[in-house]
Amino acid sequence: MADDQTKVEVIVHQFIASWDNEETLDDVIALWTEPFNRGTPPHSHSEIELLRAPLCPELYRRNPTFCFSATLRGIAEGTRFAYPSQVLKHLANWDSYGKQITAKESDIMLTRAVEISGRPYFKIGIVLDFALPFGILGGWLGKILDQWYCSMAVYYVITGIRTRISPRRLTKWLIKNGWTYIPKRYPRFKPATKPIEETKNEGLCSKRILLRKWMRGV
Image (cartoon, rainbow, N blue to C red; front, side, top):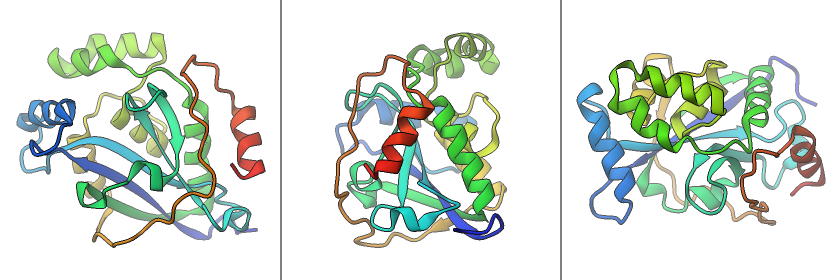
């Protein structure tokens, strides 16, 4: 069992939008948020990679980490966990930023992710948060509906604060707060031995269900 002060690495992965692929929504997000974040890469989607059991890493030696975010891809349509090998299929399309934190801090981040897992995607928030001044309406409505988009969810997992933040703005925040760019390494991830079961998002995913799945090693 790891000591609370054992150093572990947490990684945020940022998808690089490109007009060369078919991800039109990513292109629009990166283009729309660029004027407010000059000099940042065209990032359009955020994922955070966390240890599955920061205080007891020996439980998951084969697949020790999960990615967490909010997404419209697949059937999740909201906040979900997934294996890195499922999410980061083409590493050339991602920029990664890492930071050394304590196992206790990592465990707190994991707890926050479990807390908001299974929530619906904040579709209207993409418009309200970035089309209206200061995102006031989007922030108010999002809290009432308890809905999330990717960079908002990742920032909350890191800080415990829910706020309007785009993937490009998140990149600026990461760099300012000591997160270090990780050079791309190939290959990086081994295929997961068991797929994570995707379920339709009905906002009913409980902490107990997720924790039981982790303990079974799925």
